[in-house]
Length: 327
Image 1 (tube, one colour):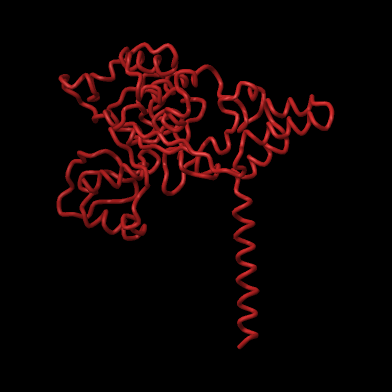
Image 2: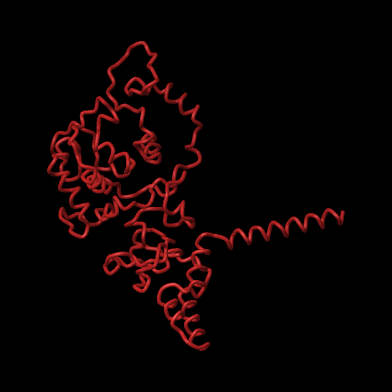
C-alpha cells in the first residue's frame, strides 16, 4: 500500500512541476522577461551607457521598476465600455517615447493618437479589434472558435474610428473619410437601408448592421466583383480599385449594433454538421434559397426569393448567423 502511495506522490509532484513550468512559460511572461533582461527602451539605454558598478546597479533597478511585479499580468479596464484589455502585458513600451525604434511588441504606438486616446481611458481593442482578455498571440490577434473579430490589419487600420467619429470628413482617418465619400458618391443609400437614409425605397438588403454580419475580407472582394460571389445579384459592379473597396469596407464595418457578441457561440448551439444538414432540409430552406449541389424535392418548385447560400460561410460571421436563425 505504501508503495502505491509513493508512486502516486511522485506522479503528483511531476504534474505540479509540469504545470508550474507551463505557467512560467506563457508568451506574455517571455516578452516581459526579454523586456527586462535585454534592458529595452530608456532604462536599457541608461544601462548600456552606465559606467561603474553603482551606475549599472541604478540603471538596472530603473529597468526593473518598469515592471515592479514581474512577471505581472497587466490589464486596462474601461468601465464605460465594459471592456478589459490585457494587450499591455506584451506591448510594454506602447506609451514610452524612448521605445520608438524598438520592434513589436515593445515599440511605441505610432503617431500622436495616444495623446487624445490614452490607453488607460480607452483601452486598445475598441480601436484595433481583437480579443482583449486573451493572453496568447493567436487568441488576441486572430480568429478562434469563440472569437471571430480579429485585430484589424493595416488595410483597415482606421476602420473603427467611425464607431465614435460620425462626422463625414474626419481628417485623422483618411481611409474612413474616403469610404464615406464613395458611399455617398456611388449612391449606395439608394438601394441599401442605412441610418440617416430610411425614407428612400430600397431594392437591396438593409446594411445598417453589416459590420456585425459579414467578414471584412469577404466584403472587400464582393465590392470588387459582386457577380463573382453570386451571378444573379442586383449589385452593380462599380469597377472599384482595390484601395477604394478597402476604404468603403472600412466605413461599412463601422455599421454595427449597440452591443457585440463577446463570448462566441454557446455550447448548446453547436450542433454537428450532419444534424445541421438534416435541419436545413427539414425546415424547407431550399424552398426560398439556392445552394449549388442541393436540390428541392417538394411538390412545387417555387421561385427563389432568398439569397444564394452556397458561399455563405465565407460571407457571414457565425455568431451573427446563430443569432439570426434564433430571431
